[in-house]
Image (tube, rainbow, N blue to C red; front, side, top):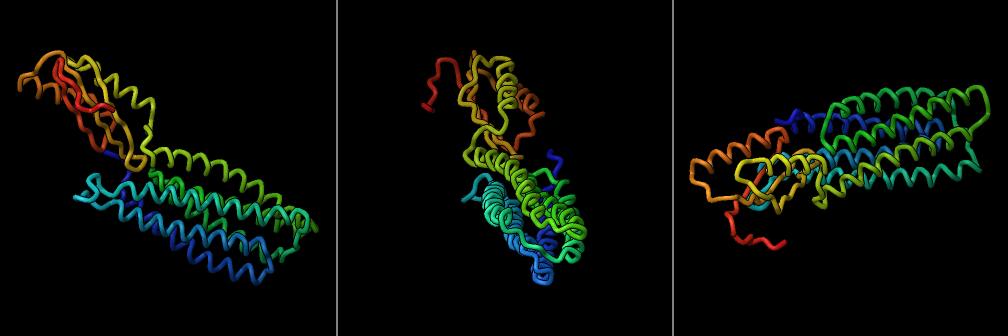
Length: 291
């Protein structure tokens, strides 16, 4: 059994959605009151995050539906679709932040430092709590969303540092410098996660080492002389699917066939596969699958 619960994941994402929604409203009001373009920019970015998290929440809940005649493997891949969309939105959001922050290196704007300080403290607390809640999740969707929140936390840390410095010195250029640094860091990690998500979406093997280990476990079984058409892919980054053809050295009677199936189940237990389809091929039998 898997250690994570899809219902718990949905609850965590739902909580984070409402936290982000209400805090985004506070950001817009706070940005207007402090005359801080940095905070207003972050508010727009958080609005995008809120929409992404809401989408992930809806798709995550739909992904828990059981299989039917239309989606015979169930709806788990909707969660993967959510991770793909959220990763793309975060990259676009990061690019937008860079677009806004780089010109400020040449024309820095002095905001209301004290107001920024209090908003930054609130931002670190709210987004930090939300990130902590999602960090307990194991799904790919939660990991991608957690980068949304980590970007927000680091962004507010930057605002906090800048606001403290600006209380004492007139260095408004620190704001875009820190924003660019943190955004590039987050962008690198999100791009890596998005790359993994795209590969899984295209049904690439989720783990090459695990696939190799599965092959060796199957080839070691008595009466199995070769393994081919071994297809190993993932529904959502957590629940994996395996299909394979096992070529036998002799026809098996019912007793031997049952024993062999039990051995296969035992050999594959450690991999916690969501679905397995194993076909036996008799000696000299021509495989009907050409590719």
